[in-house]
Amino acid sequence: MISSYKQKFADFFSKGDIRSLKAKKNIIASFAIKGISIVVSLVLVPLTINYINPIQYGIWLTLSSIIAWFSFFDIGFGNGLRNKFAEAKATGQLENARIYISTTYCVLSITFGLTWIVFFFVNYFINWSKILNAPDSMSVELTSLSLIVVTFFCIQIVLKTINTVLIADQNTARASFLDMGGQLFALFLIIILINTTSGSLLYLALAFGLAPIILLISASLWLYSKKYKSYAPSRRFINFEYAREILKLGIKFFLIQIAVIVIYQTSNIIIAHVSGPKDVTIYNIAFKYFGIATMLFSIIITPFWSAFTDAFSLKDYSWMKRTVKKLRSIAYLSMGFVLVMTIASGFAYKLWVGDLVNVRSSISIFMALYVITTIWNSLHSLLLNGIGKIKLQLYVSMIGTALNIPMAIILGRKYGIEGVISSALLLNLISAVYAPIQLSKLLNQKALGVWNA
Image (cartoon, one colour):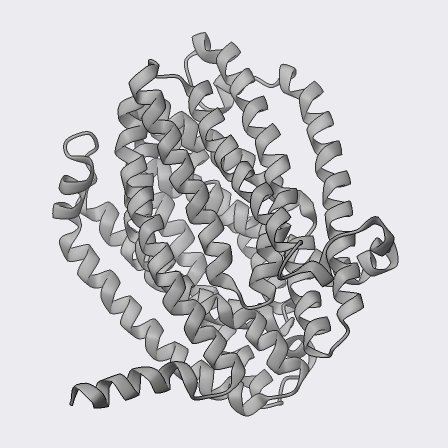
């Protein structure tokens, strides 16, 4: 019996087509890596709250979510590169793949260099205390804090191109390893701060900013001199004609990402204004807890973005159909896991943050429903992204953008955190209907008009 199980285990990693085998290996490795990431992320929350305090932590989370909007100034170049690199590699156009990488580094460097310069001058005229609903006494500190966060963020966006290359090459485990390494380094720095300094948002920003940058620089130098030497960025391979190709697809991703920001990332700001910074902390505790389920599911589905790009380029519809069925079964299991998490949420919060933060059971229920719909939607949207047929997704996202903020404010004022979550939940239900239909039409080669755009 033992030898039989060993054989099945060996067959799991040795039998099947190349795409599936590569995905399996990355999924297993990513589970181990993400497991460490989850633990580190959970440990960082109480450590950070204790280093500063719940109100300052809420301010930090809100500011971080605002600065995260800068990532979308790449105009979709990251996701555009992801598809274009995978297509070029699948069809054997290796020089084109190198041109795409070199051009992306150049465009992102120019874009975020200019973004930083503009922000440097504009920042001193921004009333961060008002935006973050923070005490006026913190205005000078918040101005410095925002500049530090933006500086590191702009550098990190350019350096993260190596992650995009890894993911496009279906090496998601290595990309996850880089993220995990940055988290571990940040944890190490936070522990040093706790033992050597008093609570400071500026020191916190330095720790969270420096850690990933050091890891990304080291990884880029190593990978471009070894595994990806033939794709290493070079001035000789910068070609702005290819930038147009990336941008043609990337602009669609960009507009969808802008919509996603408005729909989902404004929650912290809305809660800060309708309920206060402390409720931002409560919301994020629930969000991070249930985010474990979405993180675990994303480990499984992430390798299939580029796998579907490869398969669609080669018109391998039978493989795509088989894979969708298997991934939907995993989605159902993930939803069941969310229900278990909901039942155990009270105990989990107590064990995690103790009495520092009190999360109502109603918040957990609404967050669980939101995560369940997110799991379903992320499966279909990711596969559609890989195929590159995203115009319908763009239209739906634009409608959601127009509806979300007023709806979240109205519901937030009436029902608090639960109201803000329910706004995102209602918008999720729209995508839950159309995305599976579009994917089915594409895989059965029956998609016409906007379904095939």
